Image (cartoon, rainbow, N blue to C red):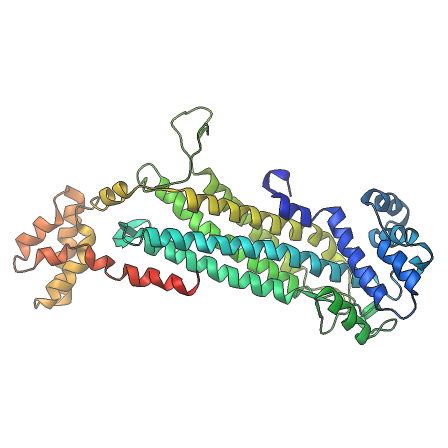
Amino acid sequence: MIDRYTRPEMGAVWTDAARMEFWRQVEVAAAEEMEGPTPEDLEGIRAATFTVEAVGEREKVTDHDMAAFVDVLSASAGPGGRWIHFGLTSSDVLDTALALQLRTAGALLVRGQRELVAALAERAREHVDTLMVGRTHGIQAEPTTFGIKLAGFAFEAHRGLVRLERAFDQVAVGGLSGAVGTYAATSPEFERRVLDRLGLRAEDVSTQVVPRDRHAEVLQAISLAGAGLERFATEIRHLQRTEVREVEEPFRAGQKGSSAMPHKRNPIVSERITGIARLLRGYEQAAVEDVALWHERDISHSSVERVILPDATILLDYAQSLALRVVRGMTVREDRMLANLEATHGALYSQRALLALVESGRTRDDAYRIVQEHAQRAWDTGTPFRELLAEVAPELDLDAIFDPRAFTRYASEIVRRLDEIA
């Protein structure tokens, strides 16, 4: 992933040095559970070192990165180096180390998602009574509150958190079953001991590789988390439009919205989140394509995973930070929300009027026809709907019909549901 979208802590998980360090940890754990190495051998194996540059030079000869790594590590371990990688095949180390790598990356994503849930919940509580119009199909529908809207996003983010936790937990498995997974040079007991050292579970059947449906599940959870961020970002983009201007992204001092038009304050952070979500969905598709390997193994998944696993985790980590910035720093324009409630000249109280007419004795069809005609007239001519309704149905309690509290009376109860998750 490009540096522009890579945050240091997550980026550090996916460097060549980090990847090979996870390899080293697996090799050392395996040697420690073997019967052959002497205490002196193990001392040398634990102290063995490598450099990315040395492995790269050796790979020019071997044309095999794991073989090159084993050669370099073994050479630095002294006589005990002959036990490094003993009885193992490349995928034993690669897949087990990848589980360690994903566990590390997953912890960062889970932490970021949890922070997002908390931030959304906090602002939902802040705006539990902030009246605004709700929209369906992009058209004004009925009043709601900004707190209810944010509570919905908080719960979606929490579902994303649960999916991420579950996905990264189920991929925390390794396998040291050897070529085609028969333990011909190892044993299930040896595998269990090594994986216990590493804090991983054993794959039920590792046919030399850990099945890739596990990794696809991780990418699906990441993709869905990204989709949730995109839904929030899309909402902000709509609410920031000049004609609406109910919510705005943070805009720092010195920031420029346009190189040509100095007045512009564009929702660029939300737009960036939207673009990132598109990439994450693409990575998910590639991960699903990786599930079907030939027979006990091939390496058609390898080149794909070298791109999608670092990129997807790095991008979601970055997108989480962007969303957190928007949630915490967004400007909520309550005055604009109230002003926009008048855009239909009261027509958005149409359901209240419909129910009142039915309760007064009209048939539903007659009531619907009366309300629709006068609500559309109010919208088209700018005549207050309340005035038109008073003419056609003077018997109605207009104060009750046009009371916005009818739409918000359960707002606190709805938002209090957040106490269960944040």
